[in-house]
Every structure is written in C-alpha cells, then in structure tokens.
Length: 596
Image 1 (cartoon, rainbow, N blue to C red):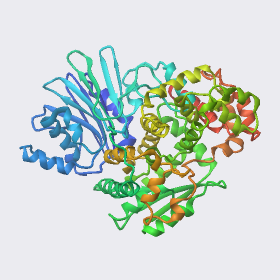
Image 2 (tube, rainbow, N blue to C red; image 1 turned 120 degrees about the vertical axis):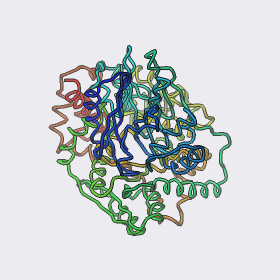
Image 3 (cartoon, rainbow, N blue to C red; image 1 turned 60 degrees about the vertical axis):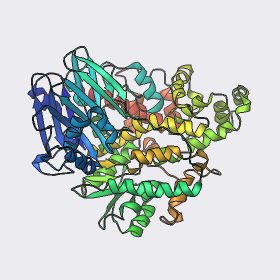
C-alpha cells in the first residue's frame, strides 16, 4: 500500500507538506508532480518492482497521463500482455504502469478489468480532468473535499484537512458514530470531507472546477442462489485458493495473521501451499479468556509456518491509545482496533505484507447477531404485543430485550442488534437512524438482507477502516483474500440456508474446510478478535476512563447519554458497557488531538 494526495492547483510546497503526513503508509520513497492545474503527491511502500522505476507519481510516455496510486493489482501481468499486444510500451515492471496504459486504452472501463485493492487518482492533462477510483469492496480508503473551487483528495483525512478544509462537525455522522462506533457511508465526521464509496469512481472537471461524475462501476448481481451443498463447498475451496495465490504476488516476503479461528486458519492453509517459508502472527493478552494462542500454534505446526506471538498488557494498551487517535483521523469506536494494531506491529518486524481473514463472517454468516435476527423472525406474530410484554417481563434481561426487539420492523431489529447501545437505552432518534438500514433489505430472506447491510456498511466503514489504519500505521500492507471480487460474488450467491444451518454459523465454509483443517479449529466457538477492555476499564484503565470520558467537559456532544449511570453500572459488573464507554473515550481523545 501507499499514501496518495493531491489538489486542483499548483503548490509543490503544500503537496510535500500534506504528503509527509502519510509517510507511515509509504516510508520507502516519495514523489511530487505539479503544474499550474494540479499537484499530486505520493508516499511509497515498495511491494512490486522495488526499483526506482516504480516511483510515483508515474506517467505515460508523453506525460499526458499521470497517476498517484495506492494498492495492488493482482492480475496486472495478464493486463500488461493485453496492452503490449496493442502496442503499449512499458518502462517498469510495476502494476501501477498497467493502470496508466490501461486508462489510455480503455478509459474508465479499465476498472472492470482490475482484480485488486486500490485507490488512485489519474490526471488527464489533455482532458483537464482528475479521475479517482476505489476498489470494489472498499479495502483502500479515499477521502476528498469539493467545496467552492477547491478539490482535495488523500488516502487519509488528516491530509485533506491540512490542505485547508474547515473542521465543522457533521451532526448526522456524529449521531451515527454514537450508535455504531463509525461514521456512515459517503460522510465523515467533518461536513466538508467525503468518502468515495467502494466500487465507485469520480471525475473532477479542472476547467469548470466541479465534480463531473460520481458513479458506481460495480455491484454484486445475484441472479441464482447456489443450493447444492457439495457444489458450494467445492467452489469455495477452489475460489479461495485462487484468491490466496493471487495475493502471494510480491517482490517482498508475505506473511499472514493467524488467530487460530476458522477464517485466518483457512487463509494460512492455502497460503502454505505456495511458500515453504510462511511467517504467521498472533497476540495474546494478560487476562484469562483472551489467550487463544494454543489454537494458532496448532495451525502453525500443522502447516509448518514460522509463528510469532507476543503477550500484551493493559500498559501496552494505555501507551497505544494516543497513537491510535492520530492514525484513525475520525472517532472510531471498535475496540478490536487495539489487537489489530498490536498484531500489525508484530508482523511488520518480519514482513511488509500480511494476509488477513477479514470478511469471512460477512460473506458466510458468522456473527451471532445473524442467529439472533433469525430467532426474532419466529416471534414476528407478536407484533406490538412484544413491546407490551417487555414492560411486564423485565427479568430475565435477555427475555426483556428479546421482547423489545420483537416489536420492531426487521431492518430496525438488525440495526438495533448491531448498535453499541442496549435497546432499553434507545430513544426515538435512535430508531430514526435505524431506518437507514432499510435500503439494504431488498432480498426475500432476513439473513441475506442482514449480510447485505453489513457488506455495504459495517464491513467498509468499520472492519476495513480498522485494518487499514492499524496495518498502514505500521507500514504494513494487509491483503484479505475473502474480498477478491470473485470470492465476494460466490459468497453472496450461496443460499442463506447453507450459511446458518441447524444453528451452525458459517456452515458451508466449515464444510468446505473439512479435510483441510482439523475439526478442533473448524468447530470451535467463535471468539472474535477482541481485547479485555471491559476488565481493563474496571481496574487498570479506570482512571483514564474517569478523566477522559466521564469527567470530560470540552464539548457537550454526549449530553444525552447517561454516562454516570452507565459508568457505575459497568464498574459494578451489572452490565458490560465497554463498547459505549470506548466510543465516548475515543471521541474525546480524538477531540483532544484534532479539535482542541
């Protein structure tokens, strides 16, 4: 991966200044291109073609097309052969140059040919246009601001802001953040900064100084669901193996994150077929119940990897928190950012690229919230009666919450299962925001709708943001094989009854991995990639939460939250409010760094 940035006027000094803010994304080399119309910046993490010929910004032969590119194109060699047959001449062996000549030959249609993870900007000097694009699922980020006559873009929001954008809070994004721990699609925490959507491109007219087009170039089109179990399992094995093989392409060593769970273990199983020297990485915490190292070590031993595991403590987390508020740019409430950042630190000591198991849960139905949603459908007949019964049955708490959920429309049910608030703490404004989920509920069955919602919201705005900032914050490239677009198409085309069957989540992926992974790994209880934050908040980090979340008074954005009650309940062990407390804590630490 790399860091890219630019704007629609010539200023080499400013371009170098904002590019320097992205140095962690690309410490190996840098470059600037500018003329009277544009400035483009690049920070390089050298992965393919390590020579100086791979340095960016890069141009075609006559300098009429320039690119600043972040990412990897895994089928670049095949595209290069096609372009060479059409007379294009190449000066490097990089995948970047393939996009330049591909744009010359195919225009924006080059996006249909790319298999990879990317965000880039092409400057077409003759057309006086900027062409920005982002990969299909949104693995690589791309932010921009188009206010007045200024257009600014970058891999991270800090660089956009540094180029001269007002820091005015977007209230709708803040409301969404409080509920879900991340800002919604399109928007950011700042009103004047936007995200380019996954699978989309944007064209900016440099003459008229306006956005000319902002379009999706890809979306999953599910026609016929796969219902045959053996066929589905066979397709998963072959497609995932091809995806992993593509992501082993590099001129530097490639490793893999390994938690010992199903998804990361499946990736390691296939990756070990293409190298005899695979490094794998995991971490463990100093609290009981969070040490899963024995499973990772078992998988490592089975496939002969060089395994690296380090134990972290509350003090390591404390030391990391200030760094995290810098790298995430926006408030970010998913505390699994902690182990993700820490394991990336470990991996970067040994490799520059690491495979990850991200998106296995979204594609194959791995979350408990999916099972809970299906359970709620069995009591749909209760309707509004569920809410009335909830007022009678306040204990046990699980029954109370179940009855409250049962009274909601299905899209609100899923949104409320996904929020950082408990349902009894919600108000009318919360349910108003839940209605944004309705646009994803276009399938006939609730599981497909829930997966569709996660694939277009939770995955790109939470999971992929988390991994991008954690890995690139340590100058490490992360590659998720489950997010190859062929794998996505397959995963979303498998019938939901094969994803959760007889209460077994990810049923068909588990069937596919039989004979490749041991049953102990395939069928062990899902743990998730989390840290013991709830325990730390009650003891080791109690003072930090008190100061930076409960007693914090530099703004009033959380005045509607009963923080004192939440805090007392958490400390007493009555409820686990760690997700909400972390959301508040991270916003306030973000405020200290970026707003105060």
